[in-house]
Length: 238
Image 1: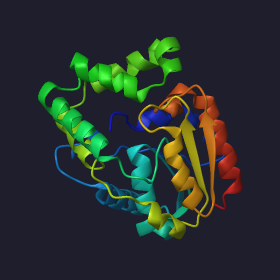
Image 2: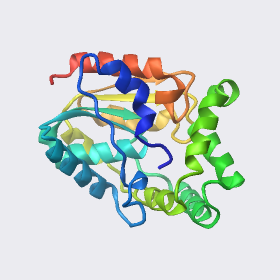
Image 3: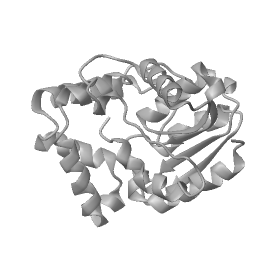
Image 4: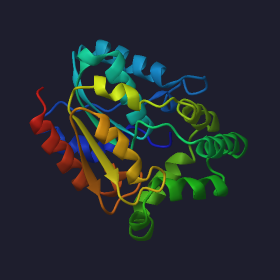
C-alpha cells in the first residue's frame, strides 16, 4: 500500500542476467487509485497485463498485500503461475482488533494525508525493521519522501482492498506449485509465527528468514532477498 514497483529494483537488476524480470504498480500507484477494489480485482489486472505482454506464465513475487493478491491469482489463474514468492505475507486474515486498527489508520490517512507527521511515524515504524531504522536512514528518508507524494485516497483504497479479506488457509492445498516465503525477522506488522499455518498447509513450501529486516526486506537486505529468490528460481520449472 505504501511501496511501488521500485521496491524490487535491486532484485530486478541482479536477476535480469538470467531471467526476464518485470515489476509493475498496483492500482494505488496509477491513475486508477481513487476507486474501490479488492484483491480479486488486482489479480484480474495482472492477468490482463500478462495478456498484453504476451506472457503465458510467470514466477510471481509479491510483498505484503501483493502476496495476498498472489495467492488469489494462483487460485484463479493456475495455468499462469510456475511458482510463488511471498515476501512478508500470509494466508491468515487479520484479527478483529487489527482490522479496527487499520481501518482507523486508513481514515487518518484520508483526513491528514500521508505527509502528516503522525502518519509518517506510524508508517516508518511499521514498514522498516529496527536495524534499518537505526542504521540505514538513507532508505527510510527515501521512502518517506515518496510517501509524501501519494494522494491520500490511494492509500485509503489500497488498505481497504485487504483489511476485510477472508482466511485463505483452507484453499492452500490446491496450490501445488512451489512456494517460497521470505520473511523479515524484525517484521512487527506480520510476526514470523503467522506464516506457520501457511507453510504447514501448502503442499510445496519453504521459507527464508532475513534476520536484519522488517516489512520491507527487498530494500532493507537486498542481497539476502535476491539470493533466496535466485536459489528458488533454479529449482522451479520455467
